[in-house]
Each structure stands twice: as structure tokens, then as C-alpha cells.
Amino acid sequence: MSSDDTYSSFLDQANQDTGASKVASESNAATAKVTDTDVPMELQHVDQYYTSESDEPFEPVSLQWNGKNMPSEDEFADLIGHGSNVSTMSRSEFDPRSQYKEVLRAVERAGDGKSRIYRVGLGKTRIEYYVVGIDNENRRVIGFKARAVES
Image 1 (tube, helix red, strand yellow):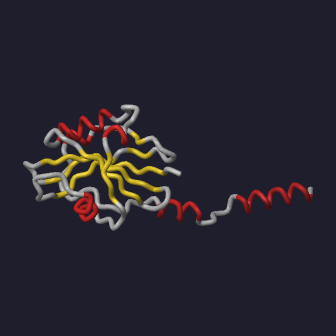
Image 2: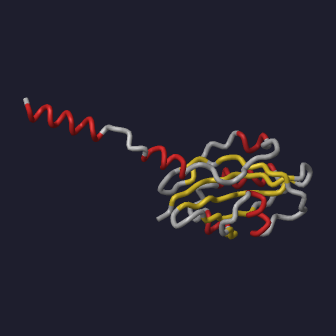
Image 3: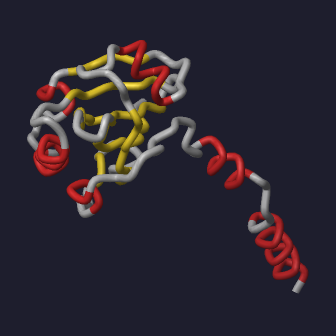
């Protein structure tokens, strides 16, 4: 009987809330602004996940932009409110297996027919990828954001 009580006590302690899940969810919280204008219809119906150690969904992005061209890396960092390192990458670097054709096509249809991929480093293993285009008519940068964990 004593060993059953000891085991039960062990299980009770193991199942106590340590606060670790709260810390994990806070660290995964969005840190960048992704919408301040209406999201185009073409972007509202894409249901795809970016494959990494976290497999996160692509989220719509729609941000007011007064430029006629794609933002530079520094301009994009300011646009999303990040002081983090931002770089651009080619389509083949972002999608070497052609898994994200639907995402790229939706961005190009919703915008001016072109897209650019920004990689935003958030630390040693956390990254955000932005696949965006320009909607000059409505003066905005539109597209998708996906979070990734890569170790």
C-alpha cells in the first residue's frame, strides 16, 4: 500500500503545473506587426503550413506601404517593427522542393505579379519567413508570414 501511495504522490507532483507551458507560449507570441490594412481575399483561403521543427501555418500579411517598389531589408524591418536581422532569399532557397507554390501564386495574384521572401532572425533557432508582394493600387505590402524553428 505504501508503494502505491508513493507512486500516486510521484504522479501528482509530475502533473503539477510548472509554468513551463506559459513560458513556451509567451516565447512563441507574435512579435511583429502583420496587418494594419484589410487582407486581400486571395490570401484568406490559403491553408498551408511551413515545414520546420514547429510546422506553423502561413498567416496573412497586409501592411500599409507608400513605396512603389519592394521594401529594402531595413525598410522591411521598420515596417514589421523588428530590430532583428532581416535578409532576403531566393525562391529556390526558400522552397527547394516546390512545396509552397500555392503560397507564392496567391501572393503574386493579390499583388503586382511579383514576390519577395524576407527571412527575419529572432534568435538562435527562431525565424520568421515573409513571402510578400506589392499591391500598388491599395498602397500596401501583402502576403504571408510563417514562423519556423530551425536548430
